Amino acid sequence: MPAHICQCLNRLLTLRSNSTVTIANERRKSGKEFVESVLSLAYKLSEMGLRRGHIVAICAFNSDWYLGWLLAVAYVGGISAPLNYRWSLEESRLALEVIQPAMIVTDESCKWLSELQKGTIFSPRWHVYIGNHYSSLNGIQGCKRPFLNFQTVKYCWAPEDVAIICFTSGSTGKPKGVAISHTSLIMQSLAKIAVVGYTEDDVYLHTAPLCHIGGISSCIAMLLAGGCHVLIPKFEVTLAVKAIEENHVTSFITVPAILASLVSMMRYNESRKPKQSVRKILNGGGSLSVQLVDDAIRCFHSATLLSAYGMTEACSSLTFITLYDPAVNNANQHLMEVSEITPISVHPIGGICVGKPAPHVEIVINREEESSHVGRIMTRGSHVMIRYWGQSSAVEIDSGADWFDTGDSGHIDVHGNLWLVGRRNSRIKSGGENVYPEEVEVVLSQHPGISVVVVIGLPHARLGEMVVACVQITENWIWTDSALPSNVECHLSTSVLKEYCRIKSLTRFKIPKAFMIWRKPFPLTSTGKVKRNEVKTEAMLHLQPLLCNL
Image (cartoon, rainbow, N blue to C red):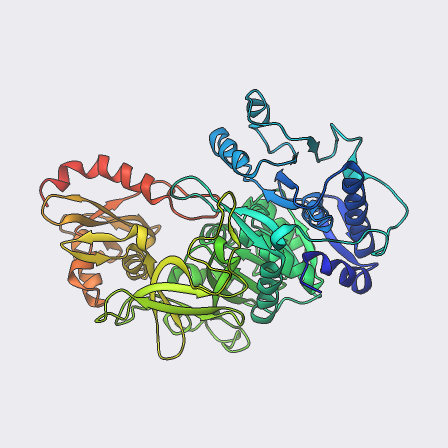
């Protein structure tokens, strides 16, 4: 029988029938209660007329109800299309035009629905509101029926094996709907179980929204493992820390911005002790600075800290790397030098080490120049998307046999580790040479005086583009390009950082020509990715006079 994400339900029913599977606000559901709610909802959806291939758009905060809907829709052969509640009216309209849902499910997070309904393109057959009060379908979410078994309601598959349509985060251009199969989700889940080590004893905190592939894939992995889910509506650092403490959370996923918020709150609040219960932290959505890794180990010193590289089109993680393992690094001794446990030092060819491919993933490098080890990162396997929804076939994929171009450049070392150099669409062309922002960022982020750095390319009459670094300074450090007394140590300047890049063996043409102090949070997508175009626009306004003189 082919893979299906609802195959987790029988395991939950037998393994955790009477123990807690979901915790959301004051609601707690045992395995039996959760499975019954999913089957009851699936039965109701089938009675209503939801059929194979029907698309159900979901725009809501994280909750046990959301989790139930994802499974119930898949159970009857429908396709869930999670929408980002943070989207603008225009982004939501474009997404709905692509997927043409038969049903839309919302809660109080959906601010744009009433405005959208004033138009003519939005005409789903059903609209369901989930929450503490139900505005339609007579409280479908809480329907009560005698317990249904797997023979009463048999799950089925949507055409093409599509389980969900997950939209890309849209850091550049409009979001695209990625059609992901049941098989892809199951394979990704098994990889996370094998590499991260999720088990039935885990208490997993949903820090990522269920509208993003990272949140969805880790959620399915935990369902298959049979663990307990702790759901908060959205990530807020106070809610997250409270949930960790009250529920003895053992695992969660992060992006750099989320991890930074957690360690910042814990580091500056002396009453908060290191979280002993946390055993597994998986980072995605960007590399971690040396300082952030150090802080995270101090706050969660019992946890294995891993990082993953991936994308929506590949159903989340392609590669994994362990940054810290308390079973290997003696937790009783003072923390090791971060450079010894964090393999993000500069490589002779450049890039960030993102580890080895997951067991089910094939990766090769398609070199653009024979003289260079760097090339296009290509992948193939059951993890690759079916296609972009609304397009007749997947881009650069032929029945799963051909390699999918990730859009990233990198190389593979002699140990089989993938080194990520950067996104090709963010590549800077300076003086005829290629410069990848990520490569420069990983060097500068190792300086103790820099907390966050974003590297961009700005127009330059002679070079074509000039490398510019926008930096946020670590607390208690100062910036000045004027002379300082020799006893002042914690200071930064253009000359200091250029010299630091040279010491770190960064190639001359990659060293930023200018540095800009960034005194506010960088603009981010909802997945924590930097919106480079917005940074570039603002930097150009501030540095325009300087550009003319460099």
